[in-house]
Each structure stands twice: as C-alpha cells, then as structure tokens.
Length: 296
Image (cartoon, rainbow, N blue to C red; front, side, top):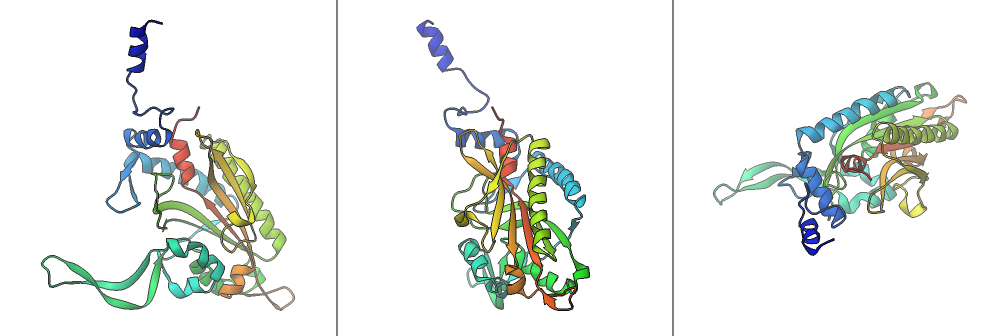
C-alpha cells in the first residue's frame, strides 16, 4: 500500500469520534449523544433521558412487567422519602448505603437578606432519606398487610427511581439517579423463597437474552459482593466489549433478617407467631447501557 493510501486511511472520518477501538468509554458516551438517547443534566451525576431513550425504557417495562405478572407479582408504589428511623432498624443494610444517601433535612425555603437568594428553613424533626432502595419502607407496609399464613405469598413490584450519590458517572451505566424495577416477595417457608429467587433469576436472564439480545452469565456473588443484609445474592452478568463484566440483574435471599428487624410477623398454621422469608430482585439499568451500545 502506498504512503498516500495509508495516510488517507488514517485520516478517514467515522460517524463517531473517537472510534470504539481508540477510546471505548468515550466512544460509548458519543454513541448515546449521537443517537439522542440522553444527555448530561445540570444536576451533578444525573442525566436527562430524551424521548428515544425513554421509549426504549417503556418497551422494556412493557415486556418485563408482563413476565413478572405471569409469576403472580402485583405492582404497587411507595414513597420516595423514607424516614431515617426506618433505615436505622437494619444496621447492616444501612451500612451498605450510608455513604450514598441523599438526605432531606428542611421542609421549606425562605428568602435570605441577599436579593434573589433562598435558604432552607424549617428543620424537620426527623430527616428523610431519598429512596436508595425500598426494603425498609415496603417492609413497614408488609408488617401491616401480613397477619396470617393466608396472606402469603405476597409478591410486590415497584417501578421507580432511586438516588445514590456517585463519584464517577456514565450515562445509562452509573448515574446518581436512575430508573429501575424492584421486586419484594414474602413467603411462608424458606423453600418457597429459594424457589422464587431462582425463578426471578431465570426471568431476568430470559429477558436479557431473548428481549434485549444480551448474553449473560448466571452465578452467585461472593460474600463481599452480596446485597447488604442478604444471605445470598444471585446475579446475571453481561460481558462488555472492553472485557469487563456488567451486573445486569440480581436476586437476593434476605432470609428472615428484614422481617426480624422491621417486625413482620404472621400467625402460622400452628397458631404460633412466625417470621416470613423475604426475596428481593432488581433488574439493573446498566443493562440498558449494554443494549444501547452495538456489540461485536
């Protein structure tokens, strides 16, 4: 090949700059922008999901919502603001999220002496944490709704946003605020909870592979990687183009830990008070980021 041809090839323009091989992380960000999926927002660590990007999320919701309803799951919605005392009930759980929590401490704004400036006023008696995840507030409702073994199983799902401060963010892969699905199921026996945990992992894998066309690897997290407070965590992991694993969905066995700390009890078949077994599942928004980027 002549020197001129080589120079022309090197100077050849591509639709996205830089190329995937030259700088994979930046290439991914530019793909998101060029496809008009999302853009960075003025709020630190958050993104604006544009109509094309949100349409993808709506289609994902539609398909997966039907899948979990076939498993007997019902949708519900719980408050965005969670009393601080709720999180304090479960020390291990709180420890896993404490450094990421956004906290509301005041209930109004007032004008300051400086023109046009507003300052927080009216300090709350109890601070609220903006939902990092919903185990504690959903558990509080479960404690009222579950009184007898006849109330079980109770299978709830919530489509919502959550907030966790992030130091390094990347659109659709890791942002401070993100959309997700969280399933909270309670059972009479440990065997039922274990069966459900595995069914949900199968549902996540089925959805990822057959709806999103994202191959995944199923496995169990190490004790260090488990969801805070869980006995075990099962996961589906997708392989990214740069060779890194991407957690795409998780199914957690919480045992009776949360029931004990939150105070969920029911009258069993033997007329004695029993604690239900809790299973938790999340379909992770990073899987959308994997789906948006073309795969080799």
